[in-house]
Image 1: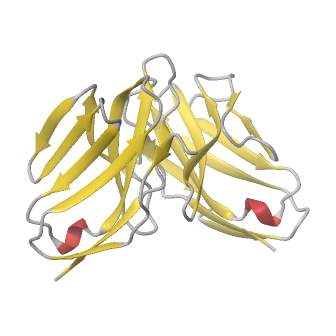
Image 2 (image 1 turned 180 degrees about the vertical axis):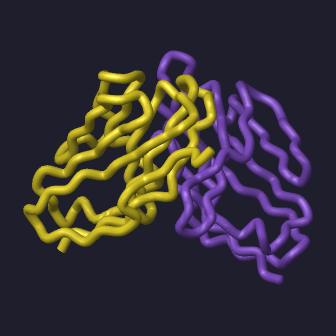
Length: 113
Length: 111
C-alpha cells in the first residue's frame, strides 16, 4: 500500500498563477483533509471532505478551493497564488472523525514569489 | 489566545535523558488527546492517543492527561537520537471532528 501520496513535492509559483495539488489515498478512507504548516503555527486545516462529492471549509479556507470527485482523490486548488500562501501543504486521510488516526502524505513545499 | 498552546522549543537533551513534552489547552470539551511525531521533511505520524484523563504507556513513551489542569504531557524514557523530531499534540471534542493542533515542539537528542 502506498498510503497517502501527494503531487507535486515542490513547486514555485509567481504571484497570480494558479495550480492544483493532488492527494491520493489507497486505504478506502472516507475522510480527507488539507492542512498547511507554517513555522510556529502548527497545522491549520484548510478544507476537508467527509466523503466522495462532499467538501467543507476548515480554519483557513480563503484563497483555496477543493474537489473530491473520487473517493480516493482530494484536490486542492489555488486560483491566484499570493506570497502569503507560501507554506508546506499536507494531505491526510482517516477512517472516521475525531479520534481516528489521520494518515499524512509527505507534503508539498510551495513557494510563491 | 490559541486553544492549544505548545512551546516550540527547540528542546535539546543528552541521549538517555527523560524528556517531558507538554501542551495546555483552554477548551474543557476536549476528550481525545493525541501525540504525533514528525521527522524533518516528513508528514506527522500518530505516536499515542488517550481518551479523557489518565495515563497510557507504550514502550519508552508515556502520555498523561490532567483534565482538571487542562494539561497533557508526553514522557520519553531513555531518549535516543532517533527520537529527534517535532512532536505535535492534537485534541478534539466528542462533538467536533476537527482536530486542534499545537504548534509542535522540536526535540533534539544529542549523542
